[in-house]
Image (cartoon, rainbow, N blue to C red; front, side, top):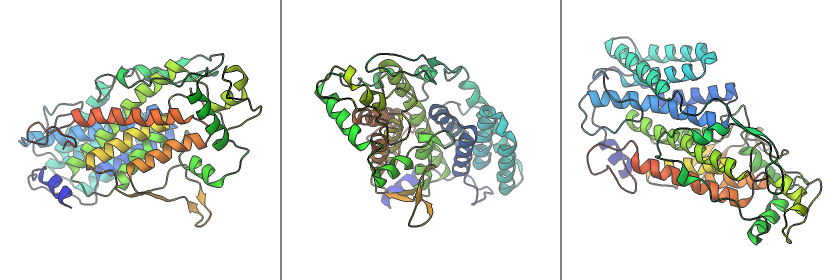
Length: 430
């Protein structure tokens, strides 16, 4: 309770204005972004970039108005400086208009649905010059955020050709342009690239091989492991792994003021998007084979402690569509958990989540609803699901979780901090 009071004291009171308590721009437009990602069947990297841009747009729109009001403790901006922000603008109107502008530019086919939602939100806010000024400012911020990310390296789509030989991923896979995308929050992705898998001939590799061969084997029935894998599987048509961390952020009810809620999700969005860069770069660099190929072709790896299992299949039902090292589910989860724990200065905050791919719980007939005791517990579960699914080796999970947490640590330490005051830096910056 004291932490929440302290957080509220950081936000100065806004001038009196008409607001609508039933409009929560950050929640509403993150849910809208999730829906768009599902409808467009976006990739994990595309989804993470979308969530970052939507939340940066809302944050910069809200923060710009606070700056224009003379708030000397406002935080630094993400992409759009506060120049031109209306001091009397409605911050909620600004936030919804910014999110709408970003999403309609990223996904023009969704414009009708997005504009319908915008119209409904603005109607609840009412009419008047403050709402009009806020809306105009937010739309401008959203347009500028989109313009700032044009040519950031996220397109056009690039593909790494199929490889060959022991230890090498043997399929072509697309989306490799993200290895060079311009970061949102970190200075450089290079320090976060993984160190690589153990040598094929090493004992460490043989131990990891033995574990996934057993726990990830489709022929060994284990309802619990299969359910955990499915719960976190999140294929195309879902919110993707980054989207589940947006949902987790929404599931944590902390009754934050709009300025702080916008900041939380901007930090979360930046960390998830920036994690995609070293994740893809690591996959491109090491091009490691998936367990299915590794186990079926173990007679080629030169390791005396591995043996081939012809016909071995992963519990997941597929072999995986990109190189094995590093696990993207794990890196996104490491980033998401670290941002949320860092923002709230506490990891052990319980929450309940139904993922987009949750299996049906036979006890209730509804999608499996799970409660986690902490952010790190959820991240560990998500990462482990890839091992029991037979899609990743344990070292790729461990290194992925570390990668994401490290990216998040840089963003928490350096981005969107107060311009002045004692909370500008620290272990848990506010």
